[in-house]
Length: 132
Image (cartoon, rainbow, N blue to C red; front, side):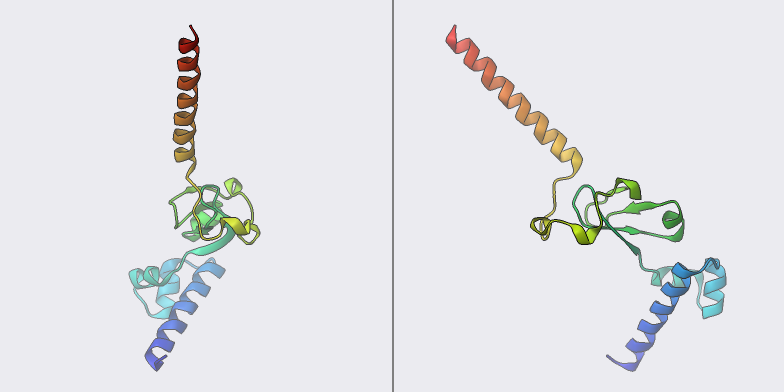
């Protein structure tokens, strides 16, 4: 790692530490660091929640402090957005079989389940007509 990359890494780490661990305004943090507000926002990384997504089991994140304060999370993997209360379990407790594969989103499961029920009903009705 070059010296410039080390400085950049330290700057990003400092920006995230100040942003996530203080109540200082973004303007105040940017001013203290000698950055523009947009530069500071460009350095801020999403905060890991430690919770698993209810739709795909990936780790949920807080995109900003307001979301963290309101316990609103989102999933970078599938796009789920919701309350931290909707999370299924701590991310580190996911079942090993779920690692490396994404579960179907709830809406896809509903459509697939409905299609399967329709198919089953069609088979039963067809069998009933054949017996007559």
